Length: 428
Ligand SMILES: *Cc1c(COP(=O)(O)O)cnc(C)c1O
Image: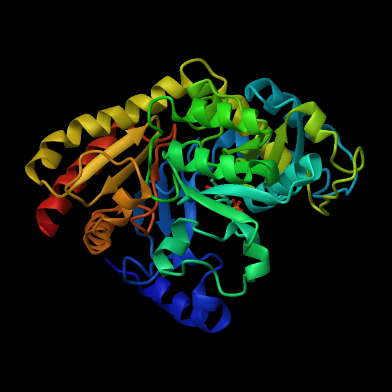
C-alpha cells in the first residue's frame, strides 16, 4: 500500500499537533504504523490522501449511521449554511430537533443541546448534583463518558490503550467523589449504595459498554440497577452517546425497556457535526438555567448547521425497517465468518444490532471488563494491519467496537468476510 502523502502530512503534523492528532486513539499507537490522512468519505468508504480506499467500520467512532456524505444530510447542511452559520439566538431547528428527540427517546421529556458527548455527561452530573444536593456519584469500571476531570477514573478506550489508569492533571480532589464499581456486578453496587447511598447523587453508566470492547448486560442487570437507584433516590443516567439511535430508535432504554432519569446523547444525534445533548425528567431538567439554579451554557450550543444535520439524519432512521436492515448486515457478516472463527480458537466475535467487536481470547462469552483486559491486544494489532492491507478500516484499537451503517452493501460484507478469513489465516 502506497501511503506517501499520509507520511508527508504525518511528519509535519507531529511537529504541530501533539502526537500529530486531535484525539489520541486516532494516532494508531496501539496498532503500529502511522495514522492515515483521509480526504473523502462516500457511503461505506473512506479514501485517503494517496487515493487508497477502505471499507470503513469506524464510522467516525459511531455517528455515521447513514454512511459518509449522505446526500440528504449534506443538502440540509448546505441549505442551512446559505442562511448563516451561527446566530447565537433561538432558532427553529432547535425546536424541531428537540421535538424529534423527545418523540424518539422514551425517558426524555425535555432536552438541552450542547456541542459534544463530554459536555453532555459533565453537565448531566452537575444537574444530578444540583437536583439532589448530594456530591458523590457512581461510575462503572470500563465505561467511558468523555474527558471531564471527575469522569477520567477507570474509563475505557484511549485510556485503556495509553495505559494511564487516570489522566495526569486530574487532582485527587476532583476524583474523590467518583465511586467506581464493576459493570454487570449488582452485588458491588448494592454494597456501595448501602454504605453511601444517602450521599450519592447519580449513577452514570453506558447501558451497554462500547468503549472497552463490547460488553452486554446480564439478564435483568439493568432493571436491578434501575430499582436500586429508585430505592436510594439516586439519579440514574444512561450515557447513550453510542447506543442512542443505534440499538433502536429510542436507544438502549427502548431496547431493554428500562427507563433512566437522565440520558446523555452524542455521535448520531449530530449526523457527523459536533452535537451532544442531555435530557430526561421534566422536574430534573427544569433545574437548568435559566429555569433553575444549575448553570450550563454554550456559545455554539444548538448551532443551526449541527441541528440541521442531526434532523436530516434522525429523520432517515424513522423509515420502516431501517434498524432491521442494519441488524441483518451484522448478522450476515457473523454468519459468513463462522467457519473462519471456528477454525481458530483464540478469536471471538460478538455483536448487538449494528455494533460488533473482535476479541482475541479463548473465552467465548464476554461479560466483564476483566474478560476484555485478558484479551491479546498484540494479536489485535496484527489483525488490524492485515485488514488494513486488504482495504478494511477498523478502529485502530482493540478496545474499540465496529459499526455498520445503512450504506454498507452486500458486496462490502462479502469483501469484509473474505478479508477476515485471510487476515486470521495470516496472523495465526
Ligand atoms: C464518545 C463518547 C463520549 C464522549 O463524547 P465526545 O463527543 O467525544 O465528547 C461519552 N460517552 C460515550 C459513551 C461515548 O462513546
